[in-house]
Image (cartoon, rainbow, N blue to C red; front, top):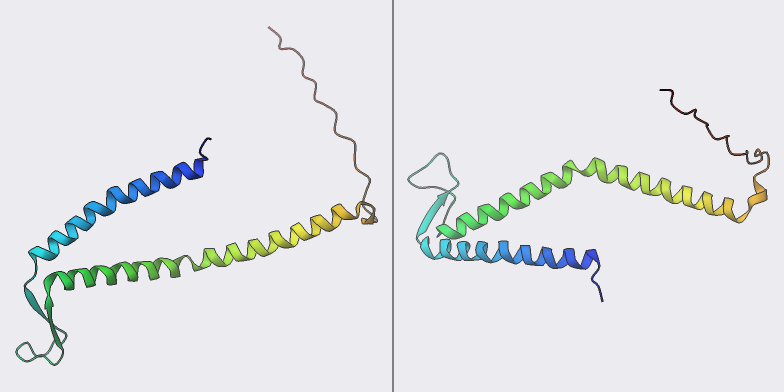
Length: 133
């Protein structure tokens, strides 16, 4: 049995994912172990001594939370930016579906096209003369 190109591509993607995700996971775990100290995050720009809104958490948790927030924000921005293309794709899909339906109806009833000209004969072939030397 031979493998289809899609199946081979799936295996390559899995191998690439493992080669990227395993070292990334090791780096994240090492970062979390090395940065366990607690940091205080203040959301009050007016009072540095006694902030109204503050939070204390480990540094690695803060960095990972900010990273997750950034990935989500980037994904939302990308999704919004591609909205126009999704709209165009839906419109073209509807048009293609409509045209397929028309084509099928014309295939089923070949004599139904009243007023349609008879099929034309193919054009004559172009005859070229041999090059002059």
